Image (cartoon, rainbow, N blue to C red; front, side, top):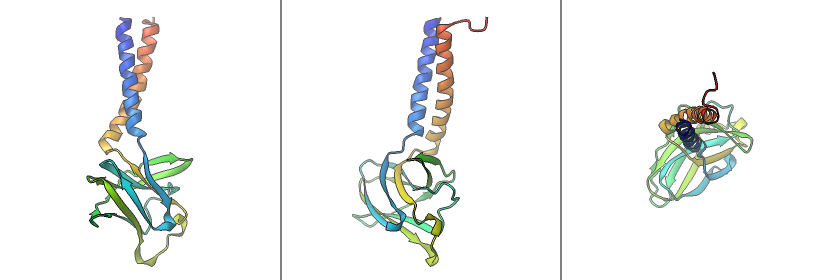
Length: 169
């Protein structure tokens, strides 16, 4: 019976590993100061990416600024989708907020431009950094949360029951 409990504990540890992997996946592609307004970057792996702001954790929207990403080779614009849940993370002890997501099918060089609408300046955000990171689809992110919570609990009880098969009596 203890082997069964140990197997349950190992399944829980595996769930914890994958849950953490899906949640904490945020390899940085490029990071630059917002004042630069334009930057080139290279995408080596097709997939889902996000544009976020470091230090913009207290903003509900990205202000008057819009992001525009284009392929340098053929000048094709990439469609940016708004992140409705505005995922917040910590990066270097500052809040990082995902504002837009985009999907890249072709590897190569791309350019991001920050366009300010109506000539308005967004004073509180001018010193913030813009960051482009790898992202995870929303379903995978929710599964990551579920796997992390259940995995920790299952592994805890599996290990406890392996050590002491009758903890309550």
